[in-house]
Image: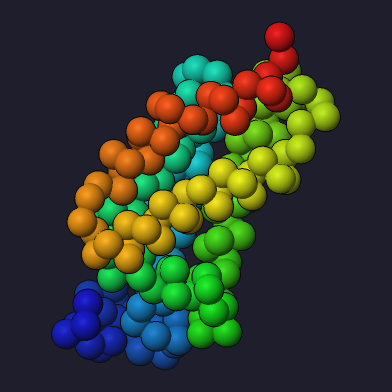
Length: 171
């Protein structure tokens, strides 16, 4: 991407440079847009995933980590940097908000279909689970990708997610 010019991108897409700048300010904005699409698709898959809310959350969280890992450490570093300092790029803040909203959507759906209690603190639970994902993402980022973010998230889900969700489950 670094060595690819905007002219090459627009030519490959069959659009003018002006059209590019109508939708994007920089080349890396395309990467953010594609990433947002990927994660939206993941959310939709999680909403349709067979199993209870715990299984849907495990599916979402582990795939989130795997997608992030496959997307590259460099892109992850951009997301982390932009989430910490949204003045650099509003896309980072929007990604964080989108990720909270996705987990919140899974939880709201579980309340609506009777899996979770009506008084479940959906907002707080969504923020907490996103904080956990972002904390793991930050640690993976700081380590330079020294371990598998996907595997570590899977271990978290296996060992701790159920205990976090259980108090909210309808009996």
